[in-house]
Length: 249
Ligand code: ADE
Image (tube, rainbow, N blue to C red; front, side, top):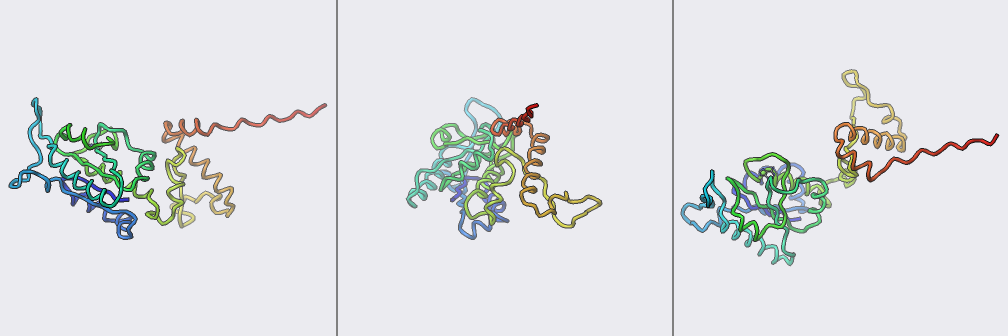
């Protein structure tokens, strides 16, 4: 998966993603980061201006259409040269659909993804209409720019790309697979500050451990995320209890 990011703050993106698991995955070639400074595409060679006042008045400056469009076209050209299809272009904005694990899984199927990070009071609508395919938010709050949301999404998508996680199973079993949160986990020592590891986890009985974990996942989801629990129950209705047969007298 090749991630292409259009931003005014390339260092912010690179410093966040070059570390840890995403950094290692890039070194190994499972993902790549093509981070492009929109300012490099400003038509104003002297001041590299990329923003201007809003028509109709209003506070703040707006990112202009031309530098973003030219920046996008240079990325698109590189993608098409590789023989890949025209990419999905994500504008990270509080006005988008709210990001979740399902959206991450859908985006993880692509070969290239382009992210547009906005700043100031927003972006000229005409360039959005021209290049954007997906409007995505990371939640109902407003941040100062699109870099952090883009990094959040890239991180969540990357770990679903084959090879990025060492243990492929961990992407399957953790929180949100199946609309359930992950069960509680314990490491050594067996007793810490008077608190013991649940004995079933020490039993070596894998079937019982799996049953206990599922039960804990369900309980935890019901308590902490009743909205998810409802979805889980709809997809996994509890089995009706078997009626006990009456013995004939
Ligand atoms: N830009 C500013 N706030 C945002 C949010 N909540 N999600 C995505 N992009 C944003």
